[in-house]
Every structure is written in C-alpha cells, then in structure tokens.
Length: 346
Image (cartoon, rainbow, N blue to C red; front, side, top):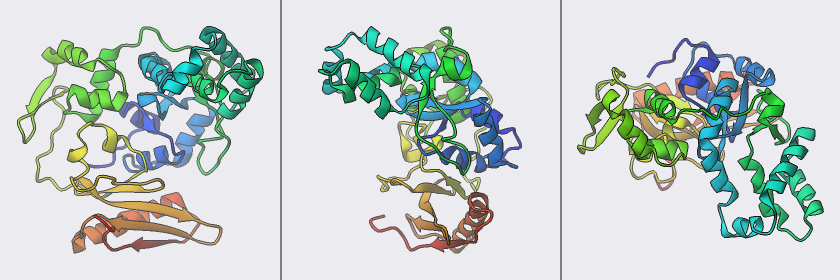
C-alpha cells in the first residue's frame, strides 16, 4: 500500500524470502516496496554473503538473508527430497545406485569448486556409466546448496553454479528450525490466510496441524464467502474502499503466489496473468496489466499491456509509475514507455 523506509535485508526477512528464478526479480520486488532503495545495497549483500540465492520454498530458487538460509533450510528438506524423486524416471534412476554414496560424491564435487548441474551430470556419468546420470543430477537439490555469485548481482551475470551452504556460509542448516515460527512469519507478511495458502506458498506439508496448535494466539476473520481465515493479532486490515496505488511487480513475486486462492490478487478471467519475461502490474490492488522491459545496445522499451480497459486516471498513474521503474532499471538510458491496448484474449 505504501513504500516503507526499512533496510533492504530487513525487508527481505519480513517477506521471509524473495522469488529469484529470474536474477532481476528481487531487485524489482524491493524497489516496489522500499524507499529509498538502491539495487547496489542488495547486490553488495549477495557479494559479501550476507544474503544468498538458494533452493528453498516449493523447491524453487529464492533470495534470503544468510541468517534465514541457515534457519529455514531444514524446514524445506521434504520439499527438496520430493524434487529428487519427483518422477518415476528419477525414482528408477535412484534405485540403481547407492544414494548415500551419490550424495557424498555430490558434496565433494560441489565443495571442490562451484559447479553447474550439467558438470555434475558428467561426473556422475563417469563414475556410474550405466546409470541415468541426468536424472541423478537432480539429487544435488536435496543437498543444502547456494547459487554462487556473480550470478544474481545487479546488472551483472554469471553461470548458474552451486556450492554447499557449509562451503559458502561456513554453517549448516539449523536442525532446530521451528515450523511454527515459519507460519507466524508467513501470516505477518501474507495474512489473513488459510493453512492451504501457507502450504501452497512454502511447499511444506502438514501445516493444518501447525495452524491448529497456533489457533489460540491467532486472529480469526472471514472473507466475503464466509470462509475462515487466520492472521496474527493486530495486523492491519485496510478498509475495502481504500485506494491502492499502481505497483509493478517482477515476473515472479510473493504477493501473486502467496495464496492457493489467487483471486484476491489475480481477477477471474486472467488464467495466465503473466508469461515468461512478463511481470504483473497491480492496479487498485489487483493484477490489471502485465509489463516487459527490453533493453538493447541502442534502446530500451518498457511495454505495458492492460488486461482490462483502464480509466484515464489509472493510465496516467500507470505511466507515472512506469517512468520511475524505467529510471531504476536503466538510469543511463532513455527508455520508451509503451502503454498498449487491452491484451488479446483478456
């Protein structure tokens, strides 16, 4: 609803973790939430290992503080194990080798130097020539690994290489990680919500029982259909008629995938509110458009495609916010803003 004056890493921890499959996404996510925000602040934190990008919630890549990497990784271990055995082909491949031996080998290779998964597949193929090396390569995700820099740094790039958390941070996952704390942090950021919402967001199974244990200390509210939602006590709940500002969100953002029921953010009739390379635009609190930034050596374009007809005021506010985003993404380049007609099929 409004940008907050908080340090970047504090904002990351308030949101628990930031989607990071696309390296630029955490920067846009924080730019939309924090003021003032300098991309270099987050980039420096990654380079100095005060923050990391790692496989975490739902078995996907997230940016977290180093403290949360250590504190949360053990909680998502069942999620990452499911990734390893996520298909019949992978399960069959795992049945043909000693998995303890494989995990030990993977750890040794990753700690020898950061490696891409494709490099690990080659090592596996050389040691177990009769095995399905490509399927076994997914076993690396069951280890507590981090993706090393320079990948993920602001306006820089590098190969998608990994090493172990121990090698990068000097610490192992905390075995005493508390799932109740995870749920309370989720609700503080994304409540009111249901157990199914929290489970969808995290990928961690069995959260219904956790919600029941926490129920005496939670606030209970109901949505428009009478469905029970839970929240932390005294969390702010804006009135329905409070205007919400236009916000440009990255391709993957917690707010659009923080609930199993996305209709509170993504209106019905927009089954695919984004595609690869497109972020979403919140207009009065819900997804009303999508955006894409294309930069070449000679020019840059920020293209906005509405999903519905915008009012004159909404179009003006969208253009204004787009101009600010363009200045953030390409401060040294003149960016052309294109506000298109309503998207086909919307």
